[in-house]
Image (tube, rainbow over all chains, first blue to last red; front, side, top):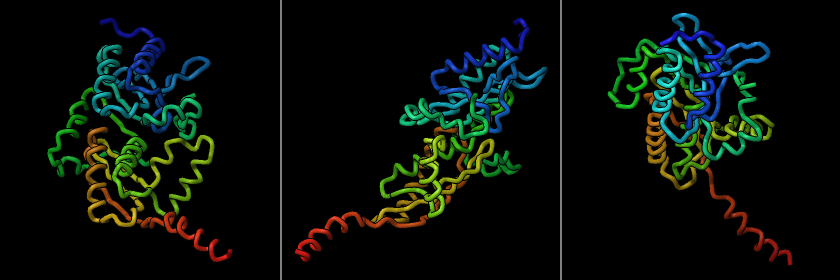
Length: 118
Length: 160
């Protein structure tokens, strides 16, 4: 397995894979807003690729329709595969209820949190 | 939300519930952190599911909750977490609930049902072991609306 050449490209690939997961409502900055990759001109919130032996960190908001351990396991194995078997720290920062999704599109409640995206 | 990471006593009170162990086995592949707001929402919904629970929160937190809902960006989820305080560790969670009961419900039975439902929901959804659910019954809701509806016809009849 070729070692990841570019942490920036890898972070974007991980972010895309995580966001595409059916149980994930969105990426999140984590409890302290510290899970992010700093890119020229912008900040990729929700993914941090550790250096060396450090774990890869992801932070997500999930849908409430399935058990979290199951979601975490599937996210972890997916991300770990992308990152060449690295350890993956997963943070479930928030949960979106089925009746809340419509409200979230107009006024995302992440804005109230320090770790909210954007 | 203070994130008190697991106390050294985490292994001692293991009641061999099947679900919490699932989070423990993946420590070599990375840590899993579940934010307090996640547990708060799940517990709040599970408590409200029990009929006989009129609303959640003590006097002060209910007032703040009503205020928060009016603030733009105050959060759509704010209504769900009123009256729910949680402490979440790596493997365990402790939950405090403030509830207002309907008049006519047996409070002991109701509290037992709320506790059971909250533990089941949180353990199933998050895989955390719920070590305690403390329930404070802050108020009792009397069916006043029925009385108010009955009053006006009597009064208007007297005026005429």
